Length: 99
Image: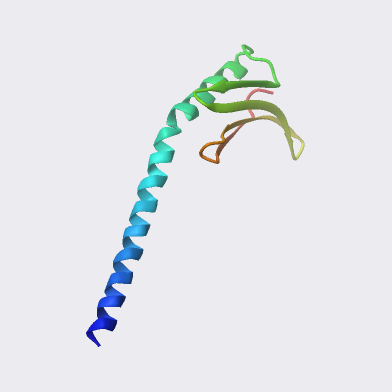
C-alpha cells in the first residue's frame, strides 16, 4: 500500500514540475520576442507615415519579417508577420490604419 501511495505522489510531483517548467519556458520565449514586437510597431509607424513601401520584407535579429496587403470583409489592412524558424514561432500583427 505504501508503494502505491509513493508512486502516486511521485507522479503528481513530476506532473507539477513539468507544468511549471513549461510555463517558465513559454514566458522566456515571449520575453525574447518583445524586441521584435517593438520593431513591428516601429514598422507600423513607418507605414502610417508613408516611409515604407508595401510589400516589404527584411531580416531583424534572426527574425524574417514580411509586410503584405491584406483584404478582410471589404476593408483593406496590412499584415505584418515575423517568423523565427529555430523557435518555430510566429508573430502576426494586423494594421488597418495604413490604408
